[in-house]
Image 1 (cartoon, rainbow, N blue to C red):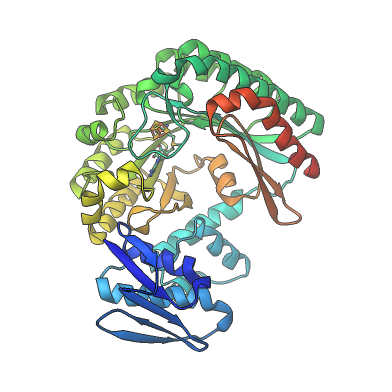
Image 2: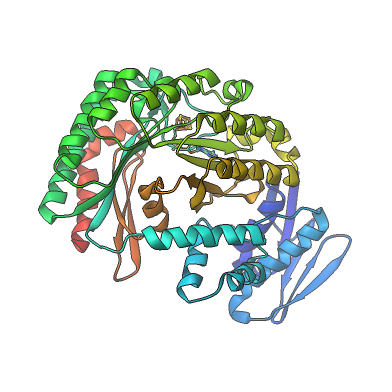
Length: 473
Ligand SMILES: C[S@@+](CC[C@H](N)C(=O)[O-])C[C@H]1O[C@@H](n2cnc3c(N)ncnc32)[C@H](O)[C@@H]1O
Ligand code: SF4
C-alpha cells in the first residue's frame, strides 16, 4: 500500500521519512500534495499533524532543535495512531553509544543520561542504560594514539549467498576463475601496505580478516594468504589481536584450523545465525546445526580459546520458540563472545519482497522478548555488552550488540565502531578510514566492490589510500 504524505516544507523530508519508515517499513512512502493520508505542516512556532480523522498540534520549544522536535511529534502522532512503540524511540543513528560516551565525558550522571535519551529521542531506559554500559567500556579501550592503527583484510567469497546478506559475498562455485587472481591482487596490496607501515613506523594494534568468508577458499589458498598476512604484519610485531571471521562452518576444515593456529590467530568466529535446521535451509546457508557443533568442538580441541558466535534475531519464520532453541544450543557450547544482530532488510530487496508477510506480522512485543532472550543468554554465559551499532532498516528498529566474557572483547570491533583509530583496509569492497585525531575528522577511502575490477586495479587502490594516509603520516 502507498502512503502519501503532504509535507509543507520538503527541507524536513528525510527526518519525516525516517519516522514514517519506522512505522510503515513495508509501505511505499510518497511525498505529494494530492490524496494525502497524512499531512505534516511546519509553522514558525508549531507543527500540525493530521490524518483523515484527527489533527494534533505540537509546539516548538527550541527552534535550534527543530528537526529533533519534528521527529518526536511525528513519532508520537504515529505511535498513538498505530499503537506501535519502539524501544529506541526516534533514534535511528548508527552509533547511539557515542551519545552516552560524550555525555559521560561532560560529567553527566547515569540518571541524567537516561533522562536525556528519553527527552530528546523517547528512548526507553533499558536501551539508554545499554548505551551507558557500552560507552564506559569504549571509553576505556578506545584508541588515543594517532600512530596506532588496525588492519582489515577482506575475502569477498562465500560457500553460498545467504538470503539476507548485503555484504560482498560471491558464491565461490560460480566464480572459481577469479579466486586465484583475487588472491594474487590481495597479496600485492598486502605487500605494498606492509611496506608503507614499515616506512612510517606505524604500530598495528589489531588485524581483522573478514568478508564474505575468509575460509571459503580451499586449504592451499587459505594457507598461502595466511602465510602472507603473518609474514608481512605479524611476525616480529607486537599485535594485540588477530581475528579470522571463519563464519561458515561448511567452509572449515581441520587443515584451516591448523593453519590459523600456526599463524597465531587469537580469535575466530563460528557463526550459526540460528540453531534451527528449517531456518538454515530457508536462508540458504548450506550447513546444519550439527556442523556448527562439530566445528565448534574441533576448534576447542585444537586450542582456540576465544571463539565468537553471531546470531540474528528476526530471521524469516522465526519467533520466540525458535530463538529460545538457538539460545539453549549456544548456552551448551559456551562461546567466549556472542554477537546478536537484528535482521536488517533493505527496501526493494528480494527478502523484502518475499518475506513481507512474515516480517510485517512480527509483533514488536514478541520481538522485544526475542531480544530479551538473547541478553539473558549472554548473562547466563557470564558475558556483558561491550559494543553496539545499528543499521538502517532493522526489523523493529533494534540494534546489534556484541557481548563477551571479561577480557575477551574484540578490540577491533570497538575501534571500528568508535572511529577513533585509522583502519587500513585491503581487498575488494573494503573501506579504509583515515582518522585525523587532532582535527576530529575522518576520511573514507573505499576499494572497488567488484572482484574483477579489483583484480585489474589493485595498484590504484593502494595509491588512493596512500595519498590520504600521507596527509596524516
Ligand atoms: C560480514 S558478515 C560475515 C560473516 C560470515 N560470512 C557468516 O555469515 O558467518 C557478519 C555478520 O553480519 C550479520 N549479517 C549479515 N547480513 C545481515 C542482515 N541483513 N541483517 C542482520 N545481520 C546480518 C551476520 O550475523 C553475519 O555473521
Ligand atoms: S556467509 Fe556471511 S558474508 Fe557470506 S552471504 Fe552469508 S552472511 Fe553474507
